[in-house]
Length: 73
Image 1 (tube, one colour):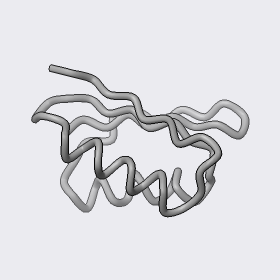
Image 2 (cartoon, one colour):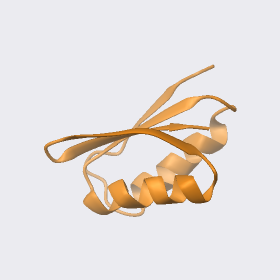
Image 3 (cartoon, rainbow, N blue to C red):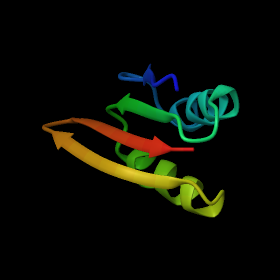
Image 4 (tube, rainbow, N blue to C red):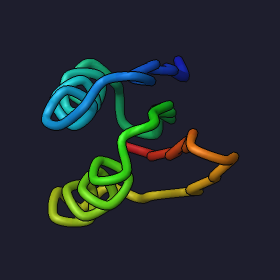
């Protein structure tokens, strides 16, 4: 099992979601993908997209303007 971390801080839509999808395509079943970002809209879009794809959003952390979303494939 390989966990991935994708850093999209400073990027705006749709880059964080696109990078998230790319990482999830490469990930194996059960892998965890963590997305780091700063764009507020992506913080809402990524979990919605994951739920639509049937993926598990494990955790969403916020630290000031930065956020971190953990997803299990």
